[in-house]
Image 1 (tube, helix red, strand yellow):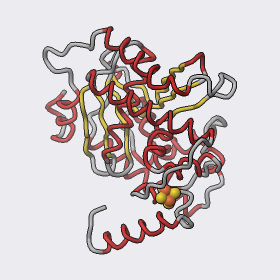
Image 2: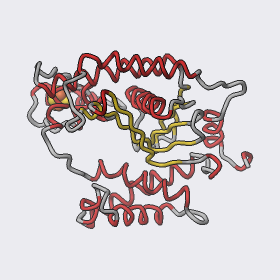
Image 3: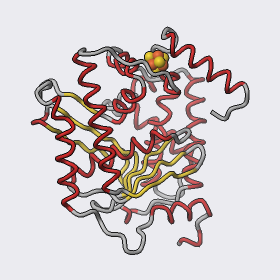
Image 4: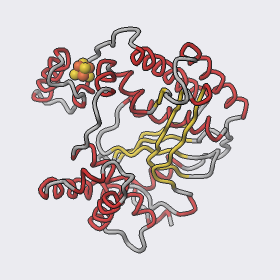
Length: 313
Ligand code: SF4
């Protein structure tokens, strides 16, 4: 089978395979991680209730660690879909269909089926957005997603049913009787519990914070299943590259510290016990305040200037 794979596919098989002598993390590490998270969040115990809990997600943590002012702004605004934000959702659905598609999948057919599936599912929040998308935007979306799906099919090894693939796999964990709820929705999970590989699919570039995102997933999966996953990987559909690392005790502890710090900051900002810090950065591009926030506008001007000078980013 492997001799039919191209060099990029072989590279991914090498990166994600179980190395000789690999051993799962011992159970006492899971217990230690759980205690550490409860200790990190002890200062906010009692601030939330199961009826009105603090909800923590990868996006919340990334936002609050990026710019707190953006976190506060996003909380007060209703999320609105756009072609760039729905692109990843359609691509994930198309890849899910590809895994179970009968026969040789054609990217354009997968994209069409993915769009139909989302529109016909009333539980999908992108459903109405896609249904009412003007023809020219829909055509642009189809083209962009078909390219991502083609890249995935060309560069990622064909996923076998024996690998137990799960797309959009959700894990939940709660503390303080449900007053703090952690949710993780993983793009692609392969393997059996205790030796799972968690893969995040990115439609664009891979940045340093993507490792933090996956470490958060590893933490929630560990706490939920009482077994740590084996490996984490971020796969760029655009660049056909995989960034990966093994799950270790140190990585889980780093995830606990970042999650604890982020959740405490979220609690303080929601309670209004301090002002939000303003931290301009690349994330200003996706901020709802990026037309009015002085620091953000200035930062984006600088970024645009750098790009005009030939920077890759
Ligand atoms: S534009 Fe940038 S600096 Fe301003 S609030 Fe948004 S993310 Fe923060």
